[in-house]
Structure formats: structure tokens, C-alpha cells
Length: 294
Length: 291
Image (cartoon, rainbow over all chains, first blue to last red; front, side, top):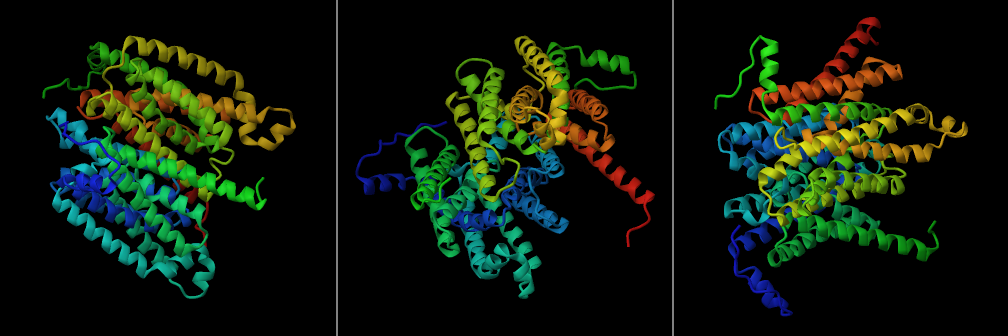
């Protein structure tokens, strides 16, 4: 790992940010990270609302295997990641029902999917033993500080498209998430909506893999949404808070990773975890204040 | 790369397999690990606690990394972290498997944090990516003699404990309310059982890694429940299947150059799938086609 001569942070916040953004890799990371975080925050809000948390975990596993399978077939990593997640999303969607990670059958299946990814990695890096772990680790845990300009552009474009799609289906999606039966009775095409939503989740997971890696998806997709739902019960406010929190996590984590020796992915998960604890505490204090506490 | 190649002479194959010390250790550990994994896994499936098993296995990753960071064996870190979080889940997690919306989000965040922590520990140690990779997906290399001895001791203790509490645990798993009414200490039992799960996970991680341990722990139990509804017979099937998956996985991984985790998960998932499909076909033949 190369050690850069970086000035320690001062109290001059503007100067600090200028220092932070004077590096190319930090600009790429900030840009891609912001775009990915907005999409992850918006989609994540619905993921938590629809109780599909473990679908996002499963999609993370599929992203790992898809990405490495793609590399094996000579495709770029991102193409494989997207193909893997979208195919899995459509597969679980057509099987019907909400796939829950706790179920024995799905759990065993997705453990096997990861095992398959390991095989692909071994096949891909055959003969070059040092590359073996490094590539696997960067897909599993992300490498936001290593993004190239082209990858950043793809991430921004995909995230903007995802956000627009979420805004477009926002009202019917909200309706059918909160009360699917009434929504169906009122003529909302709930099946189509949930298929579209699964694909959006798949694309977001594939994007997030670059930032936090296939294993840490929860930190960017689920934690902001879970915190937002504890802070406000109003759906549109919750959506905005969720996206804002996700962006805040990424910015704070990038700054932390810049000035400390800690990996960026760890910083994102740590900040996500800490703010969820704060949100739980706020909720409990508020309940107690209302006298509704246990 | 010209490695050893299997032939039709099974005795010679076995000799090849046991030729190296690392492989002897791997097979020995695999055998020791598979027995408690199969036995505990049967109860995990019976009690519907597969998600707790998933959580505990992911916590193993920072545990192993922390063990190396403080210069003890990764096995020691695994045992400490898994047992501590089993106790934590036991105290906090009234509804860990109840599937409440908010809780699954919280658990997910904790899981992500624990994996991130594992990444941090291994960076602090400046460990190789290869080492991290071995924790996540298992390895057949590098199980030391001392690890084999600790594994054997812990496995023996876990099996003895399971033997003592098997009957009340079975009662409490199948019908908790009646068991409670009959004076079975259901809460204490489920706490003790979570600790046993933690021990089984911590050991099995050595062979198949933290991300794939789920397959070795849960698939044999799930397959055994498909084979037999009688509890003691099912328990036996579960242990036998766990042993079979481990041996077959290790042997195939040795003769090819591919990772052991892939083969163990493939055998586990394949067997489970075959049994499910077989039963569905049998049921379809026995019954007239549904209207």
C-alpha cells in the first residue's frame, strides 16, 4: 500500500475539504459514492418497508458470483455483477413470494451461490496465486478509493437512472408496499410493480458493490432506511431522510478513511451501525417521553 | 500443474490422500467438526433457528481476524467471538427468528458492521488477502496440530453437552409450551443450545470458512428431516450426511486444485435439492393430480 503524504485535518473545514478533493481518486470516490448513496437510500427505504431485507443480502451473494463468472467469460466485472443480480431478482420474483434469508432452502441455495463464486475465482486466477485473494476481497468488501473515471461515470449514470425510475413508480410502489391487497383492488398492477422494484434493487446492489462490496450491502441500503423509519413515520419525509443519511454516511466515511489508516468499507459500516444505534436511542427516548414506553 | 490424480484403485487413492501431514490434519479436523455440526444442525433446523446460525457464522470472521491480531490462534478468537455473540443473541433476541420488519434491518446492519470489523482487523494486522480469503471460504491448508487438539477437545465437550440435554431439548424444540408446563427449563435450554451452535460454527469455520459454514451446518439437518420424521434416526442421518459432505469435499478438493468450500456447499445443496425433488415426485405419484 502506498503511503501518501497527507496533511492531518485541521479546524479549517473548508480547507480540509479542499485538501480532500485535491486528489483524483478522492474526487472519483466522492462523486460515485454520492450517486450510489442516493440510489441506495431511496431503494433501501422501500426494501425495509416491504420487509425484503434478506433479498438484498441474497442479491449481494449473486453479485459476487455474477461478477466473477463474468470475468471468467471475458466480460467486464460490472457487466457480470449486473447480470448476476438482475437474473437473480427476476428468478426469485418469478418463484413468487418474498425470499427470506432465514428460510432453510434459500439459505442453503445462496450459500451454494457463494461457493460457486469461489470456484469461479479459482478458475479465473488459476496460476496467479497472489491475485486470487486480492480480487475476491475487493469484490466482497468494495474498493471505493480505487475507482477509475470510467467506472465513476457508469456508477453516476446508473444511479441517476435508478433514482428517476424510483421517483416515477414512487406513488404506486408506496401504495402497494403498505397495503398490497387494497392497492390490487384499486387497480394498481402490484405484480408488475414488484417485479420492477426487484430489478431496481438488483441494479442498486450491483452499483453498491463498487462502494461497499457484496457483503456489506446492508450498511448502505438497509441501515439508512431503518434509521429513517425510526425518525419519521411520514413516507416522503422518510425517503428524503434515508437518502440524505446514506449520502452523509459515505461522505463521513470517505473523510475518515482519508485521514485514518482504516479501510473505507469499514468506515461506512461503522458509521451506519453507530447512527442506527442513535436512531434506536432517539426512538426509545421519544416513546418514554410520550409515556408509551414499556 | 501436475497434482495427484485419482484412479479406480480406491486404496491407492486413499494412500495418496493421506500422504501429506496437512491433509491428515484437514481430514481429522473435518471429521471431528462434522459430527457436532451435523448433530447441532439437526436441532437448528428443527427449532427454525437457521438465521441465528447465519449470524453466528458471520461474527466468526472478525473473531478469527482478532485472534491473529492479538497473536493467538484464529481458533481461539473464533471460539471467543462466537460464544460471546451467542450469549448476546440469547439475552437480546427474543424474536430473532420471528421476522419482524425492524429487527431484520437491525440485524443486517450489525452483520455488515461485524464483517467490516473483520476487514479492519485483518488490515491492521497487515495480513495477506489470501489469509482473509481463507477465513471467508475455508482452506485445507494450515490447520496446525495444536488446532486439531483444541478442536477435538471442544467437539467432545459440545457433544457431551448435547448428549445430556438432547431429550429435553428435543421436547422443548417440538412443543415449547407443553415442555414448559411439564417443568422443562426452556429458556435456559435455548441459551445453552445457542452456545453449542456457536461452538459448532467456530470449529466448522476452519474447514469451510465463515461464509459457507451455513451449508455444512444446516443442509445435513434439513436433508435428514426430509429422510425421516423420527428424531433419533434423523439425528443419525444428519451426522452421517455432514461427515459425507466433508470427506467428499476434502477429497475432491485435494485431487482438483479448486477450493474445498465450493465442493462442500455443492454436495450439501445438491443432496438437499435431490431429496426435496425426490419427495415431491413420490408424493405426486402417490396422490392423484390435484384439481
